[in-house]
Image (cartoon, rainbow, N blue to C red; front, side):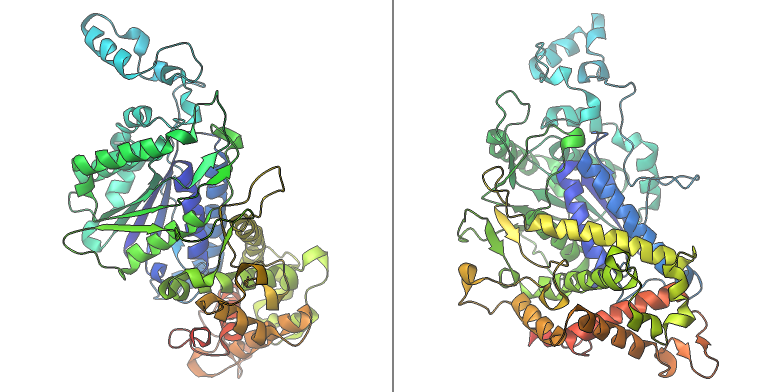
Length: 553
């Protein structure tokens, strides 16, 4: 099976990786036949965005292994298709002890080591005096705490690519990078995606260094770059090391360097994305305070990764650049401009965003009807159905430490990650205290009743234009779930799960004659399969979603 290695560099890379994890969890078809290796690259040891991204990836991995670990091992299948969490996400950093964090282990040799100490600035004398004089010209050596030579290495590069380029220069010799090189086989259609911003320090310096290190060892490598242009602006801090006013000049410098140097030739294609109206975020120089809300630009970037491995968009011989941006004609609003389904192309909706809606519905069902929100008993209708006993659903919910028990608990945990992510994408601001996202993605709100979880336009936003594809999704979804309270809506899913379980020949899970599951149909896999098929059935009216979707009529 081919492999996709995703280098998520710095805070922006980590936030894009978070959105990409949601896309993979939704079962976007392009990822079905790939093993994906996320590799987080960030010297900021306590970066909250990094830790949150790693936690989300670990939860994803736990769900995949619980649902498909035994099934894949016991079958000839080399990949899971048409399932949530189908893509096999691997941790390159996991050692023989089973420990790993999806994170490239960059850390200074000693706690609180400064860049001055890292490069041995105070020891440069004698024959190295010329080097010392060169560094004097390149770096600020004043006593200011934000001077480049005084910056602590465990807090990242604080927007200084001239520091990052020095640190990343030795990346190719690291054991984890060597492990990557040994696994990466271009002849087996393996691919690499390198993601980062080019208006800061870590991404701008890491992208070319990683590309050079790969190309030096694998000249035939298929490497794509995802260059994120300015899309957020930290609140003003006159004494801070990070100034949004410098973002555009840094971007121009990075683009000029990529254009004039040989690094651009290392990429088979280059994706660009940004926002001409940046979202204001809280000022942070990294560490535990760097935890930005999810942003529409990061979702678009994740869709670019899907586009890359799907092969849908072909680049010509004259250019390999693919540039994406939020519509510049979209009106800026004080409450943030709402981006809905009509603003996306049909391919993105069909291959990715619709799956995100299905995932939201499935997670809501697990949270409210399997484990039940608030500790109430499991949905009685679910408990009485014919499929519950053969898969041991009641026992799993009570905590029997089975694979199904672990699957349900991890799905419930992922519910929290998904709900938080969606809420951040549609962040409306906090009155006068803090502004909203400049462009808010209104897709799904799983705290709402089933019939209303797909976000729709309001009269204030655009009452006369309801021709968008996702608006049709919402209309059909509401019609399918209409006619009752929350319980009645959940019962539709339960009924569809029952229909999918019955003995209907070779495709069924249950052998009626022997009153048992078919061989190779493990309890946890059966639950995962039934859940997804039931959600798709309810959302599409029973149509085969690989052919013609009701929602695209």
